[in-house]
Length: 143
Image 1 (tube, rainbow, N blue to C red):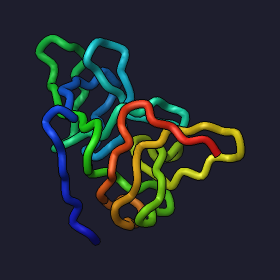
Image 2 (cartoon, rainbow, N blue to C red; image 1 turned 180 degrees about the horizontal axis):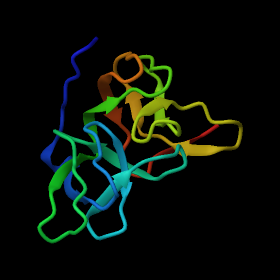
Image 3 (cartoon, rainbow, N blue to C red; image 1 turned 90 degrees about the vertical axis):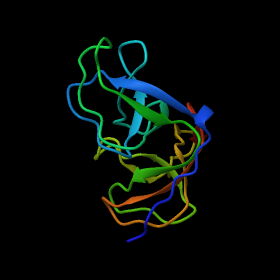
Image 4 (tube, one colour; image 1 turned 135 degrees about the vertical axis):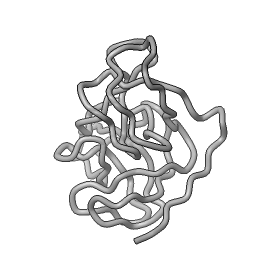
């Protein structure tokens, strides 16, 4: 198991609250939520990912007012969760459609566009935390 490192410029982090129905685990890929300044867990390689949840789990807030805010890292080296089958160092990463928030190697079919969350800086087995060089909000790759 590797020990993931984080490298971030303060301007590459945004504070957001959780508008979904459940806690979002640390290292999960997230998308814009239903309210201003909110996020929800990414569930598909077709989602427009804005970044990875930094520092700790994010409980369900239910409301922007008095809600629990947490940092979302948009760029830099962040910590992600390896999805189904794990990931290899150097692989392009997208969202695992079978494990919400986790990351898998992006292998889009010809002509299909999927979210490009970033590149794996290190290999990781399924469920492990690992280093991700983030691509930035809304990045995508076409097969």
